Length: 209
Image (cartoon, rainbow, N blue to C red; front, side, top):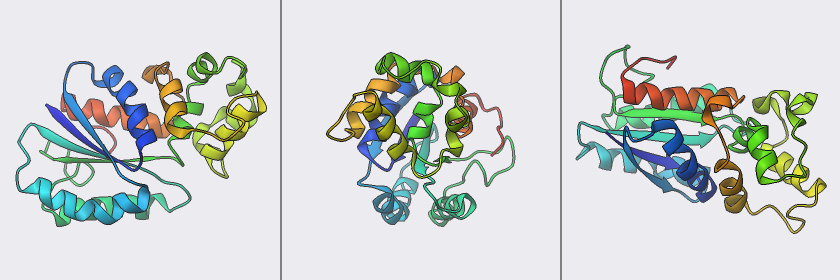
């Protein structure tokens, strides 16, 4: 099987280049296509999916990953689902368990950086001055509940401990942390849903949709 991943920016591409081999092992090949931000992805998605629908092989799947940010998750997911269905492509959430589909839509809640907070051991390994006990603090216990922007929260945290004082280089930071991440221990619920969705795509076992 082959996976085509559409992501909103190069930092997501950098993280997934490290994470995907740990999740899918050698069960599939993959290619990651970054866009120039969330709006760029959403605006171009209908045309891209219509293009895929004309030639997509039976053993290929399309995976779309976007940040929820502060948008209504149900409305955003519905937008992704609608773009696929308008292109004539079946989505995992829109089909019955066991039925064939071509598209898996997933959201990072509220941003990709929540997944980094979900693996404090990886964060500490990449940036040793960050306490290994960070995950015990109330603010960071639930990575998906960090409000005000997880990217901004990560920038403030790293700068507090003397890293990247001139500003957070998102691609570098994504690569530094993700290469140490263990998908099985991540505490972010949205990451778990993403991981389980990929595993379900490869195994044929239905997940929660």
